[in-house]
Amino acid sequence: MATADPISDLSGSPPVRSGYAMLAVLPPLAAEQLESTLTRLTAIFPAEELLVATQNGVPAGSYAPLQMVEIPPTRVTWTLTAADYANAAELARKHEARSILILGPEGGSLSASALRALAWPVASGSVDLALPYYEVPTNSGLVNSAILYPLTRALFATRARFPLSIDVGLSPRMAERVGRAAEHLCSVGQQDAMMWPVPEAVVAGYSLGEYEVGARTAPQPPDPDIRTILVQVTSALFSDIESKAAFWQRPRRLPPPRSTPPRRPAPSDDRTGEVASIVDGFRLAYNNLQEIWALVLPPASLLGIKRLTVLDPAGFRMPENLWARIVYDFLVAFRMRTINRGHLLGALIPLYLAWVAGHINVTGAGTDPERHIEAVAAAFDADKPYLVARWRWPDRFNP
Image (cartoon, rainbow, N blue to C red; front, side, top):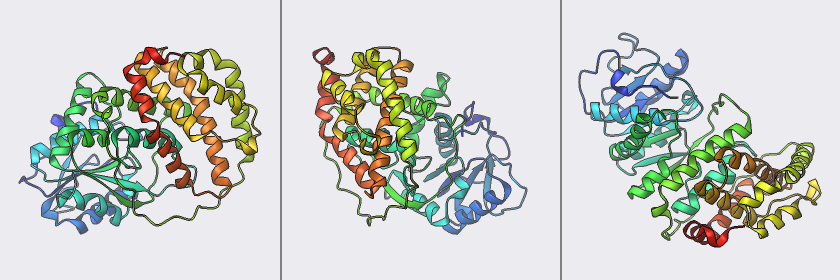
């Protein structure tokens, strides 16, 4: 969800008191979902300690003694944006909230245990940023698995599995920090810009935790085409990484792995036809995009890509270290503006889809998807010195 104006445009009567234990900022919800979400929240916090900000309008006396405040209608998107964080931070300051819970689109599908998992750690002061660990179907959320998670992990030494979380719990100081960054974006007309609270927390030295929340309904982007999504998300993440380069270039120790029980891979459908189609598209892209790739990638990576073009679809797989180098080289090219950024990220799409084809093959052969994704992340970790060297001395590595 996103708003065009700051929260100073709040309408409705303000609550009669301030100093709430929890501020819950809700997306637009159907009446039944709003009622069920409020019921779940009041099972976690006493009604008098809870302030709910809603876009649905405040039903007079319906939820007394629960305090509710209406916020202006927003344009629904598929993730949290700068406007969402700026609005939540302003509300938290105004009402002296001691913790903040922001639910993204379709947040009404979160269970009571999921809401508790995100709310309690920040309410108790255990962490500054509470992140959800979503249960997602096999071969879903692959932009996150292929790029967002391994890149954020390698550069910011964090194992946060979903760095673009659409539901978050925030301490007041975390809300203030991310709110300032969001307000800056809003001031230059980027209300719909994506926000990256994980790097903000790491750079500030704030604590973060990740909590099992199970499955939730995934909101659908206005344009569900993977090409549009990939360009939008990678552009936002690359820009954030560029702004924090002085921080992530220093070495840091990765925290220990999550202590979660192994999951049995869900049975996957036969996707050989889809893989064959992706590989055919990749081969066509190889013929059409060699000149652009040659501006971005060194000869060793170009040779690795050429070798992929002769693989049979059934045995197709992008090596983890090759994929890490490709993403790092595109990140450097993004920073150097080697070519138009839109064209650059467009040229990444067939390479990403080639990674997807390999991932489908790996999981289809019975490998735990998380095991493969962790192997990819480990390759990003191992090659971080390569990125740092290219970032500092790009001319030495010109293809």
